[in-house]
Every structure is written in structure tokens, then in C-alpha cells.
Length: 275
Image (cartoon, rainbow, N blue to C red; front, side, top):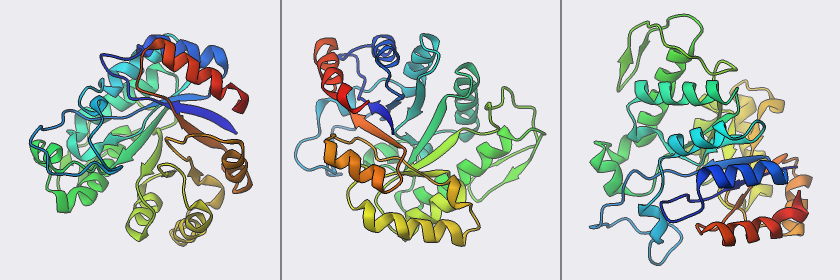
């Protein structure tokens, strides 16, 4: 099983360069970074985990800039977003960012896609909450058109692009795409429709959810061998990882604290037995 990590990198934590070097030297498989452009202080959306919103949510580094630094100082470490709020981006600009990072890292990038939980943040980006899933699906279609080997036009519900020269291209034609979110018919339809797999947060209930996802996946004509399921932001234990392995899971993403260098490196030491 590949053991990757995720961390809220901020202006107060360990740096992208330091964590990336440490992860690669220690044999970890990857680094995934979350995204929030901003957190409006007059917030009505409740924090999904309950209680007060942690400080780091309003201080996150831009994941593409941070992952670019990580790519420059590593050779093998996989790089990903967990997640990118695709609906909050201009899709033409985002397609260029993704393709550039994947090209410069020689195909090491995974795009984690999410729909968000903070209505106020989305509203500032002009996103209608009710249509954010459809908007995300549309923007994924437009980006795939720009990543196509030949100039390809796209006409969608929310946006369009003319057949264009758009380089660089992602190394494999497109990055691996994993969609985050809670299990359910809408999410599984999205995964089967435009993604390569699922980023289930925390990894609970997978024994019941995976068969349901596989059914939707195969009904969409997708090859069962191509489905990636990557439990995300996991606090590990031997029994938990053994359970994932028994389910056929080949990669898991462990949560690191949003802390300074000393605390993060101590946590990596505690995770070392799982490698």
C-alpha cells in the first residue's frame, strides 16, 4: 500500500520545500494539499467537523504554487490537490495550471476535485450553490478539451472554448482525477462520468460504499480495474490500514498536523512503521 500525506500548509507551518524533501527521503508516496482562496468572516456555513473553524482554513497557501515548489525539489514524490474547488476557477486558466504542473513534474500530479462546503466563499466567486456540481462537471469537460492532443472545441452549459492551441499537455493526456465527497448516487455518478476514482474523507463505511460505487462505475461502461479509491485525511492505525488492504485499496493519504517543522517531523516519525 502506498502511504501518502496531506497537510494544511500555511504561512505559519513547515514550508513546501522542507516537507516535500522529507517525504521523499523517508519513502512516503505523495503530498496532497487542500485549497481555500479565502474564508469570509461573516460566515454562516457550519464547519463540517463541528465546532469552531480551525485557524489554518483561512491561511492556506495556494496549492499549485506550493506543489510547484515541491515538484522542483523532488523526483519521485506524487503531488496532488485534496481538493481543488474547480467551480471557483476559470477553467481555461485552471487547465493551464494543471497541465503545467503535470508537465514540469513529469506526470506526478493528481487532481482532487471537490464541491466545497463554504457557501460564502463560493458566492464571492460567483458560484450558485445549487448548480456547483453541474458547473464542476462542465468545467472538467472544457479542461479535457484543452488537454486533447489536437485542437478541440467545447460547448457546455456554463462555458465554451474554441478549438485552440493549448500547451503544455499533461504527460498522460490528462492527470488522474479523484472526486472527494460523501458516498451517494450523485457523487458516484460524477465519479463514473468524468473521474478516475474517489477520495473518501476519513475512509469510514467503505465496506458498504465500495460495492455501490463499483456498480455505478461498471454500469457506465468503465473497466473495474481502472477505479481508484484513495481514503483521504486518515489518522492511521494498524487495523484500519489492514482493513483498507483487504478491500483492495492500494493508496491511503494520512493527515499531518498544520504545524511547524518540529511537530510535523515528529508525526512523520510516528507514521514511519506504516511504510
